[in-house]
Length: 185
Image 1: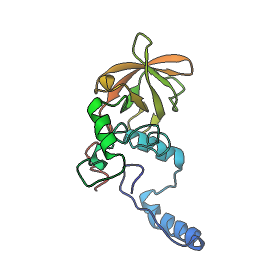
Image 2: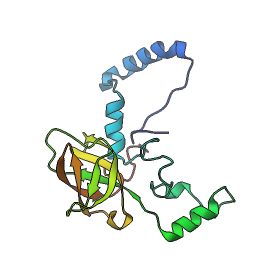
Image 3: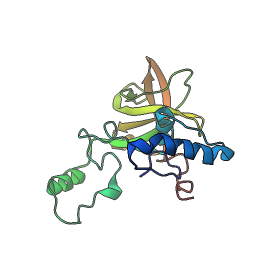
Image 4: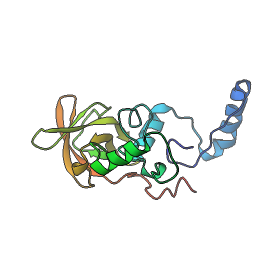
């Protein structure tokens, strides 16, 4: 399980050991410049990896296939509830596709989710589900659901951030370390 696309571990332990473990880890990592970081840093890192978040990109509002979870959904692997309906839906085509966007011309605000995504003529074709600044890439990013016909990498669209219409470009998934070399280090 990894939320940020970096080599790491989750530690599960009795809560009464929390402070001792934290202090021991910080002491052991001091010579490497180890520093604690918080949820906003984690969120920025997940955006750079195009990782979906439960409750925003992964919700009952969208099918798993719309959210880009194709590798986890196998229509030919045993029976499950909704299998026939999902296959029919896939055949008809989904209304949405999850994309990663680079937001251009930002000055002091990033998308945060809920922002409308539009064509250059102002036609609304989706919405950002989350967004923020990717510090490792030095770019403003957003994850968004858009019409599938406008989801190809390189597609130019617009986003509304604080009543400013800004240009965006659809990126390949996982713009930071797309081959997961750091995750598998």
